[in-house]
Image (cartoon, helix red, strand yellow):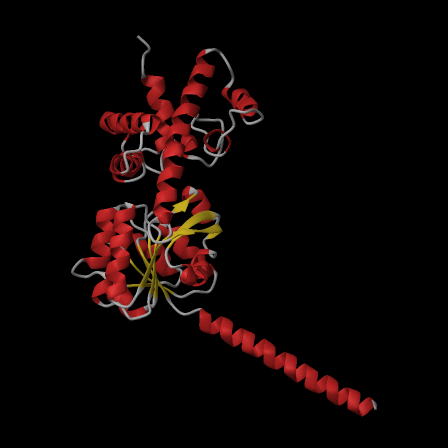
Length: 330
C-alpha cells in the first residue's frame, strides 16, 4: 500500500510538473515581440512597462534619438513603421495627432505597407473618432484588426503603469488587447465599437480642461483674498469642490510635488495639444458635427488657444493658473 501511495504521489508530482511546464511554455510563447510606434513623453514609459513585463519591444519613432534610452534597455529600434510591421504581429501606436496616425498607418513607409494578416493593431493616440474608423477599415482590407485605445492619466500614470485605457473595437478581440494594455495601465475598459474609445476620451478631456480652468480661477481668487493655497487646497479636497485638478494635479506652484506646476510647468500635457491638435479641438469639431451645444467647452477652447498665442504653447496645460495670475482685472 505504501509503495502504491508513493507511486501515486510520484505520478501526481509528474502530472503537476507537466502542467507547470506547460503553463511556463504557454507564458513564454505569449511573450512574442510587440511593435511600438511613437516614443514621446507617453510612449517611452509605456514601452518600458511592456519590457518590464517580459515583452520584447520592436520600436520606431520619427526622431530616432528619442528611443536611445529604450534601446539601452533592450528594445530593438527600426527605421520605419513598415519595418516594425514586418517583425511584429501586435503593434501599439502612441502618436501626437490624427495626421501622425494617418502617416504611420497609410504613409509610404506605413504599417499597412508590410502588415501581416491577423496582426492586432492598437492605437493609443488621441484622434478624431472618424479617423479611427477609417484606419479600422483600411486595416480590415489588409486582414488586420484595428482597435482604438486612448489613455487617461498623463506621464506620471504612464511611468507607474497606472493609465486608464478606453478601448473601442471588435469585442471578441478585447481579451487579446487587454493582455497588453494591462501591462501599462490599471484600468482597461471596453467602450464599444471602433471610435468609441476616442469618443470617451474626448468627453473626459473636455471636462478635464474645464475643471482645470475652474480650479485655477478658484485658487487665484483664494490667494488674492489672502488665503494660504495649501490650506485652500486641503479644504477643497475635503469638500464638494474636490476634483482631479485640485487633488492630483494642482496648478499652483508649491502646493504639490511631482506635478508640472512644481517644475515651471514643464513636462506633462502641453497647452498646444489641449487647445489645437487634440482634446478641445476634437471636442469642438465633433460637437459641431453632432449639433451638440458645449458652451463651456467652447470657452475653454478659446482660453487655451489664447494661451498658445501668449507664449504658453509648450507649457503644461495647468499653466492656466500662471496665465490668470498675469491677467489684470479691469
